[in-house]
Image (cartoon, rainbow, N blue to C red; front, top):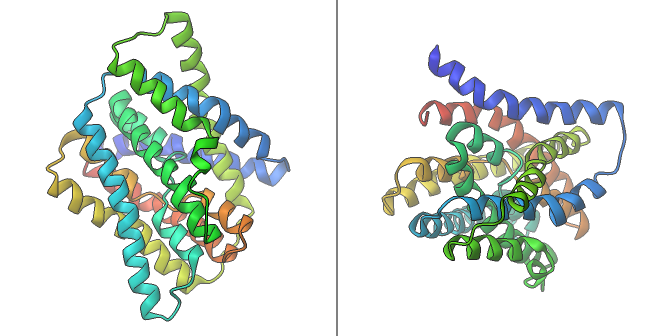
Length: 293
């Protein structure tokens, strides 16, 4: 019972805020674009700088987290290729997006903060940065079928990462009022992301269920298995191991739907997979946390 309550204490706030976003969409129609722009260009960079500059970064943990994140994305691509090849659908670029790129922010950032504290959040942010760089380079390349590799340089995420890591490794402490400003601004990121996810899910409808189920299994189960292999191979232990496993088994990212819509891919399949994996994660996340807490 104590373990159940402990897991509930971590999971409930996360999905409650997502649910609030879902209900908000039922009663009020707004454009998410200004909120998403605020996240991308203001609050996320502030969160990255405040998190990476505050706590000493273990370079081994950062390196292993980066390797595992890249490995999980590559593993998702490989498993997807084998599956699609066997069904004669190897051309479905939208399917690759759903299995390769997980939700590395809206759900895992608040989860790791609640479950593992600031140390866990720092690892989750490193994982998120790696996935974001891959999404805005490799992901766009897959979606467009060409180009896209330079898109990441147009976003402040890369530069805020360099600043945060540079301050950390250089032993430079931001003046307390300036750090507080970054910290307060960054704190808005997590609940805003959750509300946006819930709002977006409201308009999602299920379709292409056979492919959606296959993509969901590859995304969640496949991601976890690949991550488990990698953390075991690299002998990663403790909080870093748990955060990597948790982050690797997250649902498909909403950004996948945005790219599929923008570049004319299988948007119904992608939207359905994003919704289905998010629903499945309501069950899988507590199960994983029961073995981690």
